[in-house]
Amino acid sequence: MNRFIVIIATALFCAAVSAQAQTSIKPASIYQDGITVVSPNQPGWILLRTDKSETVFEKRGEGGILNASVKTIRTKTFETDKDRLAGWETLKQEELSKLKRDSIHFYITRFKGAMCLRYDGIFPIEKTPSNNYAYFNLKGYLCPHPNAKDSAVQMEFSNYSNTRGLTEDLFSLSEEFFEKITFPKRQ
Image (spheres, rainbow, N blue to C red):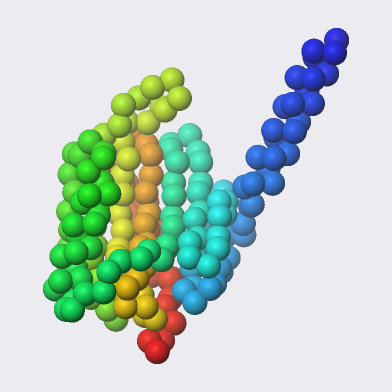
């Protein structure tokens, strides 16, 4: 009987800690610290963490795990846009080189009034008892931080699923997420 009570108490404690760590959010809530980040406009998203340099949202469902994030990262100071974009591409390639690659693409694009590096990739992952998904799909941007020459704003939307690539609905949701992000005016 005591063992049963300990098991029940442990389960309740774990559930309480889990519920406390994962804050439910109202769709399209705004999180701000210099950069305005709007949560994805769908029910079921939770705020995993937010601080002065990072905001991360997650949604779990039968079809997979979705993640939307905005993070300020330190880089070095670059002399030109061309040098900066090439340096960022190298940085992302190194970061993603740890994953098995199906495809990855890099694009130079103007986004939010600045020259940015856009990227997308598909990475097959091995299914295991603890991982039910076959792919990690990623789409993101690296843009210059408006108030720090040695920093970038990394915006990413990703999912773990059994679908190779983002579905049309997820692609649209990612575009909406990126479009609603706003940067402060350059100082």
